[in-house]
Amino acid sequence: MRKFIGGTAVLGGLAALAVAATALATPSSSFSTEQLSLGRFGEIRIHTEDVKLKTKGDSDVYVVRNTVLPGGQSGWHYHPGPSMITVVQGTATFYDGDDPTCTPQVFPAGTGIIDDAVDADHVHLLRNEGVGNLVTVTMQIVPAGASRRIDAPDPGNCAF
Image 1 (cartoon, rainbow, N blue to C red):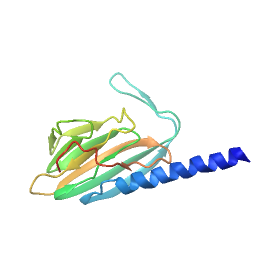
Image 2: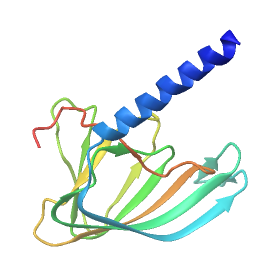
Image 3: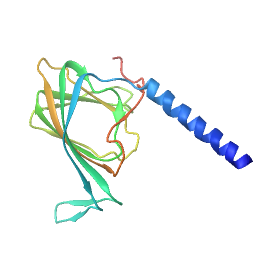
Image 4: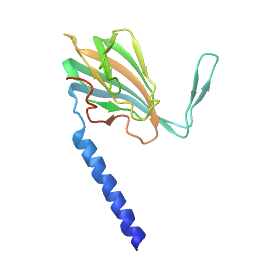
């Protein structure tokens, strides 16, 4: 009986932490996502002369279009797998949560960004600091059934 009570207390504590983390998450603004496709793949093993890609177990592969109005932003978040982002229109400005100087990384239309998600909690934020809409198309590979995006609290390194 003690194990059950202890396990229940631990689960309750974890649930409270999850609720607190969600409450501290930074919301997006003027940011919308349209899911273009979702495919469930078995274990992926691609090995060519120029490309190597290997997953463990089943994966979900998403393709999404994000539209960010001028002044809009994604909110701080991270992904449980890699993302390949193409800037279709406008200019994307990325900020890393672990950069104490909050130095922007700027990507104009026609460029691509790889978020390899080496760290499971690589917190980042995308902003549209331009005058026109920002549009990106992103392919993401995540473990089957996992959320493709996990909201995170503001890491406190940027003044905005």
